Image (cartoon, rainbow, N blue to C red; front, side):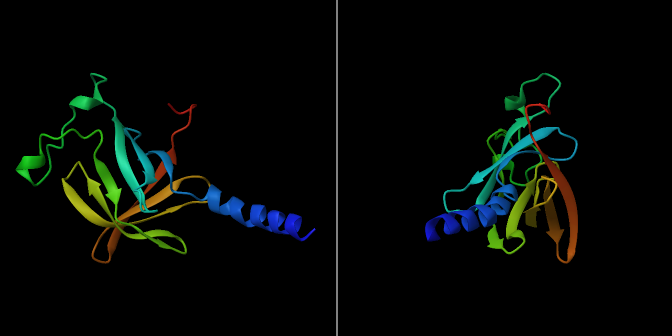
Amino acid sequence: MKLSGFIFLFALFARPVMASSVYGLWYPPGKDSKINIADCGDGTPCGTIVWIKTESGNSDTVLDSNNPDPALRDRPMVGLIMVKGFKESKKGWKKGRIYDPGSGKSYRSVMHAMDDGTLKVKGCIGPICQAQVWTPVTQDSE
């Protein structure tokens, strides 16, 4: 009986943790790209650009042309890690970095899963932060 009680408690408390995961495939606002957030290999999340909406339909041709480093401007955007370096906190992930390919700049970042299944991502300069809500990519939304 003690084991079944432990399993019940584990299932009861593990369920919200799984539901509030930042891991998965996400659309940023505008749904013009898809970001896959997976384990970096050290238990922390890394977000990789896996698709970009283009007129030609070929997102492999989109380059990191706004990068401040001229040597990196010819690298493809697809495959680029744009979210990394996070530390786990009680509310989600903090002290990470997010790269904005549109401006070519990186920002201090925090992110956490919302109860409605979305992901709140903030990029910060000093004390000023701008938040975005990312939505999960589902078969219905593709």
